Image (cartoon, rainbow, N blue to C red):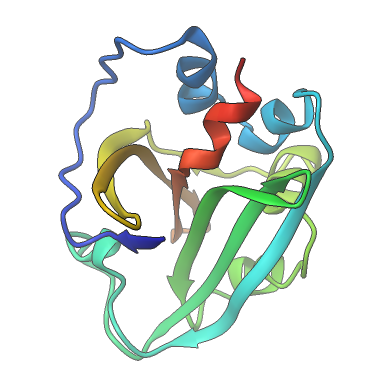
Length: 170
């Protein structure tokens, strides 16, 4: 399975003809909390943490994003050891609060963001379809993005809902 983020076209409104469960997840303030409420074991698999030398395609439209000056955390959120959400968090290398917060290993970033009563501000979600290339076809799956601001430093979080999530939303 290959995730293609070059084709994302963000929109402000969520229009669904799908299950209520995916709608709940897409609009949830804390995706971690919602996933933990499903009947499965939740875990986080860390894929990347550190300086990122390219511009992630899902952040290309953001004015503050500059190649070589980014700190990135990329994870898979898993249910029963199966990746159900791919997530990437991006801030500037000099955003000391965010870079410190992102260094939470295989713990959920959401737990740290929402449990400490931090004075951040969050943008409304934007939504898109991400192309996920499988063995014989390209499928479109929901993605969402929001930007957190604290001390005038932004942190963008992009989450893509992977095909395996559907089996947990019965």
